[in-house]
Image 1 (tube, rainbow, N blue to C red):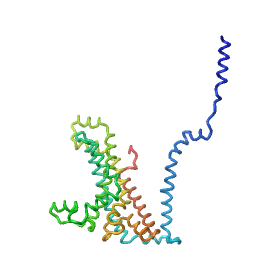
Image 2 (tube, helix red, strand yellow):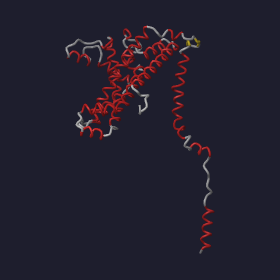
Image 3 (spheres, one colour):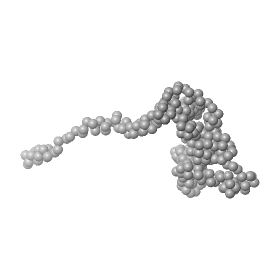
Length: 318
């Protein structure tokens, strides 16, 4: 009996396939030290090709005079031309746009998110979807609708509302204040829904026990918002306002859709619009690149100052 079992065991061992070690190359790829780099490799490649290379190339072009078939280094000549009346007008328009959109796109989505997160509101999903739909709409399509709504005719929607209030019709695209209003309202209309989602996600992460404890202590709604909601929303407030600052300085479509490349008295001229006007319209790529580099430095400096003032770089225990 014992002899039969031994023979059977020997036979089973012989039938087993020899263990084959994995290929060293695949073993290397599956190691914990390499896998993270494989996952980030596509991002690194896209960053190098689509971000770093154009940035470096743009900086080099800012020191060149570029004409068809003729490229020549001219030192700082392009930068010496940047400080002109059109650039300062564009920078002024852009700065006002940034200031207004930061206020609107931070405060309004936060209040809407608090309202949508409350237990008293019904049809929350419908309102969330309705507010997010503009973010899926092309700026050009949205801008065309806004141009119809704010046209200069007395029959336009905006002028009909103005006439109901007892005022005269407004030439919306030909006055400085209404031009800024059009750009701000279009930009805010598009991005309120996106910022709303950021605030909603953060609101839903606040522990309910904090509000229950506040109720036990007899805190009012305002006190709960001041001492619980706002402090927990601070990281999102800083994030939303920072990306709004960056996107505001990069704004182009909101101006282009109303006036294309030129507006009366440059009332709709932005810095990026000025880059497009000089680099593409006037075929002065070197000067356009110099304006782009100056804009990049402005965004960098303002963003760093803002993050320092809001305490973003401080450690959690400070």
